[in-house]
Length: 141
Image (cartoon, rainbow, N blue to C red; front, side, top):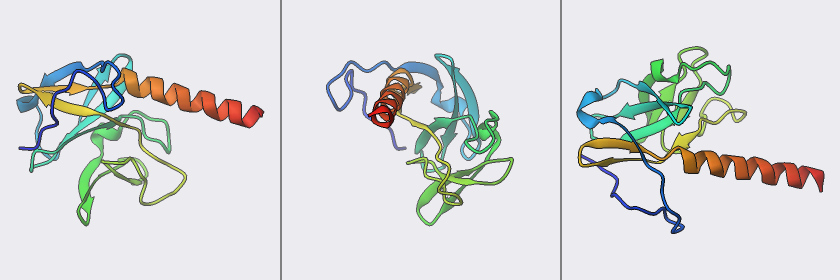
């Protein structure tokens, strides 16, 4: 089984805010599950080889919260999740959309600590807010 090492800090040395989600044995391979973490809807995807992914449950194309009902698959060696609505296909590692450059699926750091799935949503939300602020500053300049 693949697990992400447990560290109290992220790669930049900042304190990491990890949230316990569920026991790993509650997830079924190739079946996404939805979770609400700090007000953010997340879809968890466990692969048969033990790799675990956390992505936004919100479909980038429609805004509907349905990605946890998507189709888990692959494109070559890249694990994917297809939207159940319009079938856009996303790379679970990067969030890249294979079928349209207009969309990307938000991804979250995820790890397993002593059998418990943990997600880092807050730091990702802060990073997203920082990116949006930088974009606004850039656009105003």
